[in-house]
Image 1: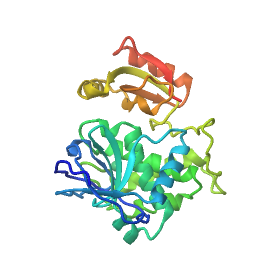
Image 2: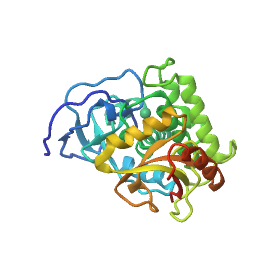
Image 3: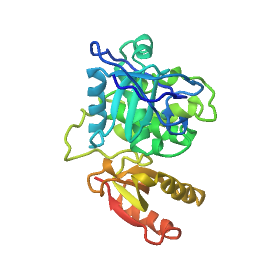
Image 4: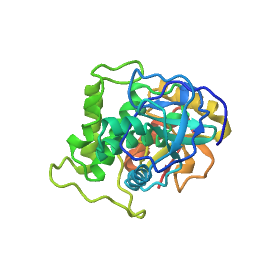
Length: 301
Ligand SMILES: [Zn+2]
């Protein structure tokens, strides 16, 4: 059993799976609450967090979700004593943790609820939210919700199935999370992006790495990026400073880990504006260049 330091705070999430037999548990040493992106508001957990091996179902769902955007998972998933689910960082390792107990008791084997939950948490990692100081906040939650709707749509679920989980959230938002109505809307938009809004049978899941599906345009799992600065992993604070500066200037920038993208040099945090087309990327480039003269456009996958 791995035994590391102690304290964790705020976490939140959930989903349906079976624990895969008796597994050793480990005490997690998670970065401060600043880097924890959770699913639901108002849930704070204090004390030690223990991780347990995830179920095969959970691992399979992660692979399915990643197949919709043609990316390789670069994070690990564990069951843990958290309220429902969260995207967290332990050292350099990106983790998704979820409560097997919560999901078994609540979701009653609702596969789509689990896909939506995992999709939400995965989006936090892919969009760099867990690299940013500040943890959960309404705009990043809505980005993650949109991706949740997107993956359910891509994998064949209908809109009601995509929204099932979100209908069980509290009506009012909080400092960290938007109100339920906004989250339902974000899920619907993501689902529409995946399906074209068709109420007919959705397309079969895509598995080919050669033809990744287009991701929702506001989600960073996109194709075209304006790169407005790259920093080594050891310079997270500089990357965050650039991010904050450009956001203040009104640019829709996010932080990505270049390890996620085949065409990028690995080992960097890049501040980027994501676009769903080459043309839009070059339009964005003009705006970015006013602040970062050496910004450039790069294809992500
Ligand atoms: Zn979240």
